[in-house]
View 1 (spheres, rainbow, N blue to C red):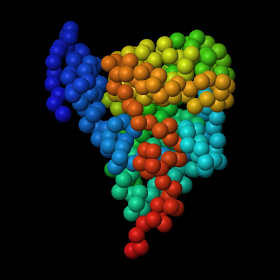
View 2 (cartoon, rainbow, N blue to C red; view 1 turned 120 degrees about the vertical axis):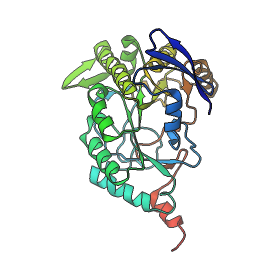
View 3 (cartoon, one colour; view 1 turned 180 degrees about the vertical axis):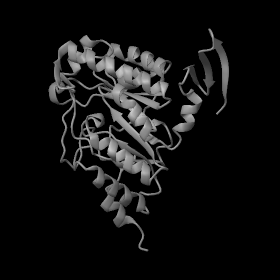
View 4 (tube, rainbow, N blue to C red; view 1 turned 60 degrees about the vertical axis):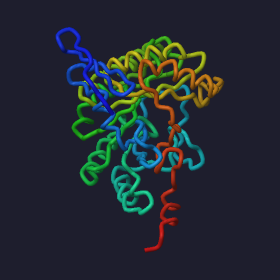
Length: 318
């Protein structure tokens, strides 16, 4: 891919780059778009060939510190495929054993490039997340470490994650305005305080953007997940896109709401409306369009998750 410096602004603290079809303004300490595109090679959830590169999610994080109105977490479910669902919550030691088994598999081992932690709660509300990353990095340094978070504890955790070797980060941001956020998040629990309404939403949103800014300054590759909730946050999406792009995010993943819990009454967006929303924002920030809203214990290729026992049975006899 051809990349070029095409403009200098002001005293040189910000530079504009052309990289393929993307334009990227770089602040001091921020990775360029080209550097990020190089870094995501092999990462299926950031645009790296998802037809041959796989990921393994480790469900080590059951605790959560916010209540999303569209979330219903189930810790013992084998039949649903959506965020917040897992068949079993693992300890860090169980997780590293699982990684060893999968990496030794002749079927799964060759395709797994990424170890991710995405729940079933929020990874940053669980100490097991940090211990799991430490163990994986120590034994499998070639694997990319990836994490998805609601961002509430991101500002205070980002340097610790960076030290552990976190490769890529996904932050779910559904609103810029606290009044809108209050319609999405019934409550937030922040350092022992139970916050509701606009106060809870404002605390969450402030921390989300502060965390994204700090991650950008550290050069992490970032994806922003936004749940499209028709009639509630449609108008927020361009605002989120512009703000996170300015802070260093690489790509945005606009996902349809799966109606349940407090927002079970919401009609999900049609495929046409979802596609139109993505198109409307792709001039602001690159759009990721093949997300399957994976389980917290997903293993394999996106859209083609494999049960480990089935994979082992399918392997040719030695």
